[in-house]
Image (cartoon, rainbow, N blue to C red):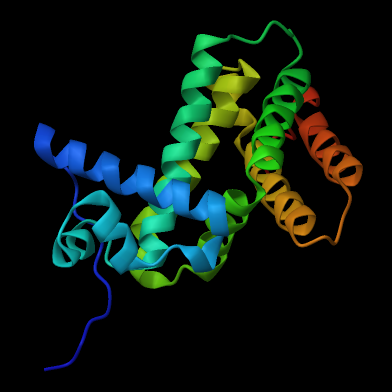
Length: 204
């Protein structure tokens, strides 16, 4: 019998399963915030979250899947903050700049957590395609909601949103690795966000 490698993470359906998944994510977040990528060990996560190791692997088939789950959870929290504290800027670009600078402040507070999540995103292979896709879709939704654009206008700017998303991730990676300054990362993000102030090119 040949091994198929890690399988997609199992969804949590019942309240008990959701509570168990919440504990797993909370423990993983704490470990990553304290020690970064290497500090997140599956056995320690299982013990701290009070779940069997086999159960943990059913929820998250690998450490990469687990940290992608943490990343998705962090993005959901940012999205919730955006809804609770609506932006007041009228210009879509200014709204996005403010949102992403808010995100960067969070990364500044927890740089090891940010490093762990971004390494997971970098190292993800085909077995985590569903998780990577979920992170990408949520990021796009968050950015579009932050822009304030809706309907056809939002659809016309989807390419700009993808560019902003890529710039955000790459700027964060370069900053975490010490290859760019915070000021340079902010400048790059602002440059990308200006795409939302331009009229989209007509389809070819």
